[in-house]
Length: 146
Image (cartoon, rainbow, N blue to C red; front, side, top):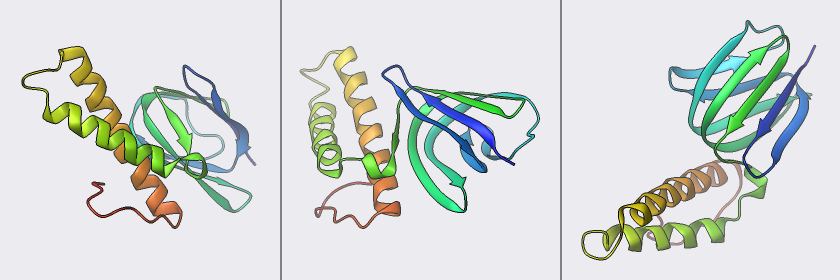
């Protein structure tokens, strides 16, 4: 038996599939969702989602959001989500470097808004690099923080 799982971000629907199992990071710890899971509404934390479908595992990076489970229908409204195989490592490294520069310059030159955006970009790039390096063979340049 399977259940329907969707991940929706402000930009697009990242995933829409019937799956066997999902492991999701929540504010109360990791939870595993299986078919016929009890109804649930919870906040999702930044981290990695593991999804099993027909014995094959898939992984996604998620930057937080809200999860609703109801009658074999699971919907994750995420701030940001990306499949591990779609993570562009070079872009994540560039984003991390840009964000680090802004964060270092924050005392003198950067507005609070730009600082918050840089901090968010920095966290997202680290998350992407962690998920990509765990799930794929990725050569990170020396000095890359993850």
